[in-house]
Image 1 (tube, rainbow, N blue to C red):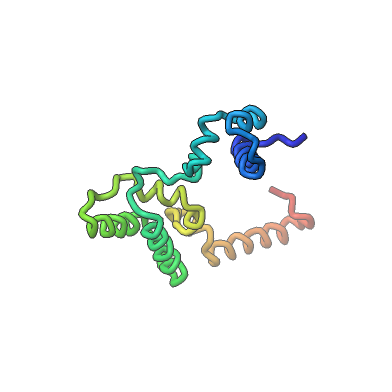
Image 2 (image 1 turned 60 degrees about the vertical axis):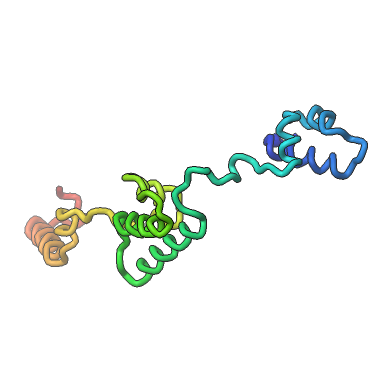
Length: 160
């Protein structure tokens, strides 16, 4: 028998109560092994904890979606987004509501909880790595290898 989560059992219990008029909440809670108080709250319209939006969020869903669209639009045009830009935009939206500015790590946490943004932010480009990608340096290395192979008559390349 497949393992069911408590959420699935609560949904089944609610459906059973609604279809069968003789089944009480207490009896359904016992049959489906869920807390009777949780079942009662759900039937009265409360939402589950994962589906609830925290009360202490800084921006509404619409405002967050506006910021995400702005970032993706800038990225599509070739401008790399920065955390400071996101923070400025959030502060501007909050200022229009006369609210306090967002916290120091808000932009970082915003990016972490939005999967569509995680790959849009650039990391610092290492100077040594940039030097290794220079075609002239790479060409010089391969010319040196080719000269060594010709000088010592190495055929398979395992001479280092």
